[in-house]
Amino acid sequence: MPQGDHGKAVWAAGRRLPASRVRQAVPAGPVTRALYRFVEHTIRHEPAGGVTCELFCTAHDCGEGSGSQSEQGTAQDWALRHTGLNPGHDLFRRVFTDHARVTRAE
Image (cartoon, rainbow, N blue to C red; front, side, top):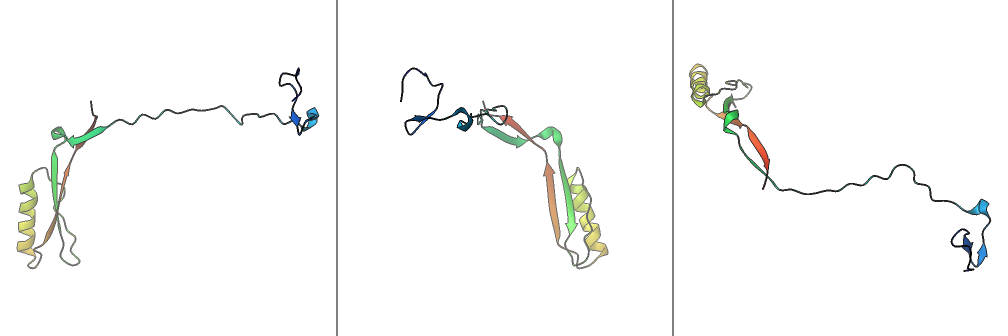
């Protein structure tokens, strides 16, 4: 490569290219960089959120439920009454819901 131009000219196969054939690298937009830091977290039951219980009758074409109850006994009482009024409705799906808190591990 000939000396003296200090990178101002573009050379290809030993000869200088005309300025009309030189393409400049132009960024399409601002360059964005991201740094990812992976931090461990823990998840635990949050007692302040409470626990709710709900029972659903699984008998064919029934679908009735106790509704969300803050006391498990209230939901169970509903299931006992429901079975008493509807013989054969003796299987229930129980759903317990609580709250969880995620915290960064130290």
